[in-house]
Image 1 (spheres, rainbow, N blue to C red):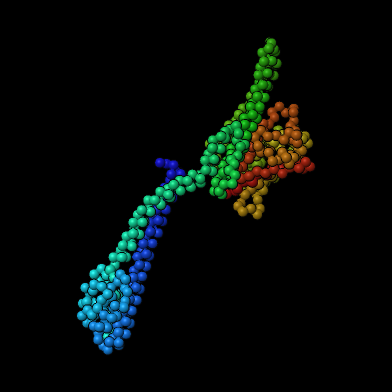
Image 2 (cartoon, rainbow, N blue to C red):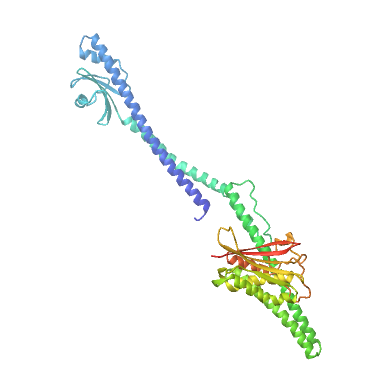
Length: 455
């Protein structure tokens, strides 16, 4: 049986059985020693009493050992024991059948206890007399046999009670676990906001429930992000497709001149390029989430890469009357993926151009990070745009997010952004074990800082 409750009960019964056996062996051993010690004390006392009575009777009978021994023995009540008085090898008197120990008793040391022929014997010496107190060990064996019978009878009884108690205890202990299982079965993608409630449960189950609730919270955020991502992607895809379809419908609605057809095709081509860029971005992010993107790492100079990116964006910036400045130290070698790092810089520059008003200025700086635990370098892209409010700054790196209310895009610019550029920047920075941060004010514009390790 693979039931955890059964296994828990079995372990409980096995532990209880081992504990009962150990206790039984201990009790049996202690009881045997206690009965032996009690018998030894009784025999010592009887031997000492016999010696005292013999000494008194010898004085009264003026040395008549036979009469003195009989008088001494007649005054004793030894119970189950036998007290005998020997003179040399001759038995003078005994309280019962004299033990067949005359020769052995004569050689026994005075004041000691020995076991001979199944009897426990205590011997006291006085002159040439030996006072012997003896008792068979059968009484101890009988008492121990009774204890063994009780233990043999009690063992299966206690084991059964332990099994029943262990089963009930396991059932009660696992009740919160069944509650957790029942509540988790009722949670689907439609009610991920639900949480597991246990009330006053043990700390271990509370920790387990808390872990499940944390997992549900992460799943809820992931599902919500996925739903929002699908909705935003659908919205972004619908716009260029609608434009393409509209232009095609207009172009085909009647005969047009070659210039009009070329104008419609140009619009379709522009929207197709935007649609292609969006699909590429979505595909790259999907591959990054799945961990299927392998970086093509190599040695490069980051100062040269930044300068080349700034030169490639100068034409776009000049068309909007925006100046681009870049400042780099002498040389900054780095180990990374050149294509991804180039895209990171281009995306930041494109974002800055998109939200900087005409006549503005963009600064691209490269500097080594001072005081860092590990050697690193910072890429800082600043603009003189309207900045990003604090409420929007927390979401600026989310996919399809745009802080349009603070950083309005140029409506005349047909190739508007999709809200994926900064998400890609964050992914590229983190894939290089770096980070990206935003510092923005309404007076000074926005500054994006990318920190990358040099080693």
